[in-house]
Amino acid sequence: MIPLEKIIITQQMIDAAANALANEDLLFGESVKQFEEEFAAYCDSDYAVSVASGTDALLFSLMATGVEGAHVLTTPVSYVATANVAYLAGAKPVFCDIGDDNNIDPDEIRKALKKDKKIKAIIPVHLHGYPAKMDEIMDAAGDIPVIEDAAQAHGARYYENRVGTIGKLGCFSFNPFKNMTVGGSGGMIITDDELLAKKVRMIADSGRESIYSHEHKIIGYSSRINSINAAIGRVQLQHVESWNEQRRAGAKIYNRILKDFEGIVLPPAETHDIKPVFNKYAIKLDNRDKVKEQLFNNGIDCDAHYPIPIHHQPPYKGRNESYPVAEKFADTTLSLPLFPGITKKEIEEVARTLQYCLQDNQEI
Image (cartoon, rainbow, N blue to C red; front, side, top):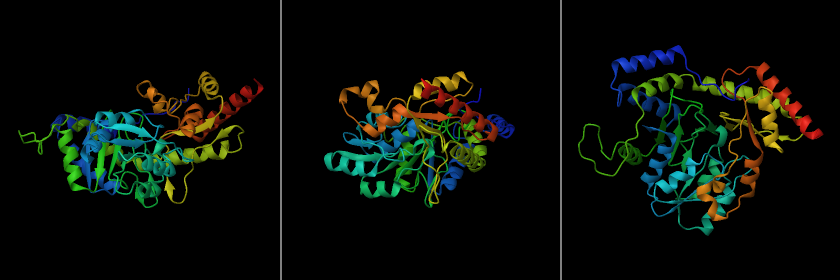
């Protein structure tokens, strides 16, 4: 079986974890502070605040910008947490459709803002590690805070900027299926705004200004990355650029082989100005579910990301909303194996098997 993804744990990471376990406080250890500083530097950001998950990163960012009682605009094509955090922050998530890059459409943002004056934050998602059209999104947003969901896009570049640094805040996830995993789970918030950085840190640490304080000034959460995961994250940060380059190289091989296949649409490609990191290599094809089953039965792991758009998830169904491009995406997208270290031979095997499955379905 060629896996969809591979989790990388090296001896260097194991040694770093063991050292943190033996020599640091398990929470608020030196590795946590260093990981935050190094991640901020990597992203070209002034501040980084570590938390327990990417979901918490989004939630605390919304809370810090003050959206209670308001609406939060986002894409219906993402992991459901992108919308759920609006409810958790006391707001209501609202959606608009996606564009040709599979990310939120800036023109649809403008339409939504004209109709809905209660929108007080916008969350674009850099889906599958491909940067959203941030120049246009920022122009459409005006004074409305933009919080980038960069959970799948560690290290991606949009023109001269790392994603996550263009909006008011940027949010990252380190779960086991992201470009960085920290050996478990975690999240990070980046910003150039000192007051926002301070506020999200307080929210993440039960509302206190310092770990040495017994005074809790606001209502907060206990959401922290531990020193062991931070130590692993520091090692991974040294390699993420190489891993991303391997993902891009694999995507180029896929593009070269699959470009003449009938019946499939390739993912948005790297350009001179946009440097994606291909957390997923997701094609589009009709009869997706049948092809997915055949690929798996022939030794190729694959999956759909995401087969149910958020507005069709059970908690959201009562709205009776329609976003045709997003719905078509959900019905047709299929992620093929791509991970650091994938070989040309493995990609060629995936392509051969896919071609066989496509021909088989045409005959049916």
